[in-house]
Length: 148
Image (cartoon, rainbow, N blue to C red; front, side):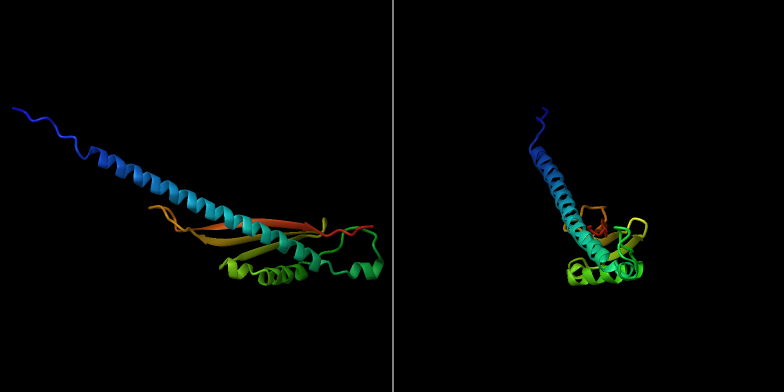
């Protein structure tokens, strides 16, 4: 006589599988949210750094030497870079984002300053087989122009 097959325990395997998939989805959402929030913070910091660099980068020499013939002021990279670094230090960027790096570019033709920030992010939760950290970046730019 043949015994009927016992199906007890089949639901347990399915519940454990769903729990694992749910835990991985939660980890993915938490990590994506952390990356988004860091990028938003870096966006704000990059915009402020670009404004500070553009403000300090305008030497003012052209005003004293020849007046305001052109509404755009001359920018010098030698003044912009230290101003951006000082802004990042005073705004707490290095403390909030350990490993923060920046790059500055100055376009003298348009009197614009562009700042690019990058900072590593350690994910709060990590999925098996995924990296434990990523590099998040943000850009900001500003133009120096006089008002008539």
